[in-house]
Image (cartoon, rainbow, N blue to C red; front, side, top):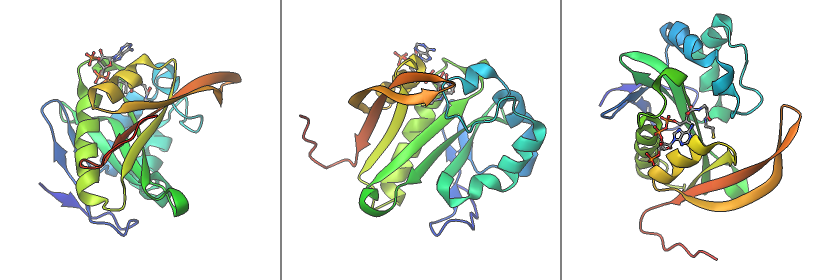
Length: 194
Ligand SMILES: CC(C)(COP(=O)(O)OP(=O)(O)OC[C@H]1O[C@@H](n2cnc3c(N)ncnc32)[C@H](O)[C@@H]1OP(=O)(O)O)[C@@H](O)C(=O)NCCC(=O)NCCS
């Protein structure tokens, strides 16, 4: 396992996480062209937060890959590499204050690689890493638009459970839409479901 220094974070350097279908590794500026090609797609942006640029320019990709992804608010960010190039990203961002036991996960992958089990594997790798490296975190969670069957499938396949269904919770592109919260809990903890 190799590690790239991640100076914006107090935590250990970001490790490379190898899988069968993809490898997760730190982003570098040279990833910008492939990242831009995969990110510049309305189908990718459709179920992401509104700040995800669309169209996604090479300049924005260079800004993201060069340094912006290291800003503390994004937490720990990996590029998802498939066939030797970065085709998406996955991140885990620990909350602060009262909610510091929780960390929010986010991910996207270029359409060319959908439905091959890649993000399910990536989520499994990041989940395993988080339990080992974020001792304060007891819960990992994702807010997902209810319409996003693919992301709900990823969560299910990686062992996350649906914590709640939130009608009309999100405003996206002028629409009020439903969301679900999916979560996983530190192994060994007894989880009460009500
Ligand atoms: C959603 C997304 C992450 C799925 O990634 P993926 O690598 O294609 O997903 P996987 O191949 O690991 O699929 C996981 C499960 O979901 C199912 N699935 C994937 N895409 C699906 C879709 N569009 N519709 C229905 N089910 C889908 C798979 O069949 C699989 O189910 P299974 O375990 O029963 O076989 C990917 O489509 C994407 O990046 N979309 C755009 C950005 C986005 O929505 N990000 C998530 C925001 S919360």
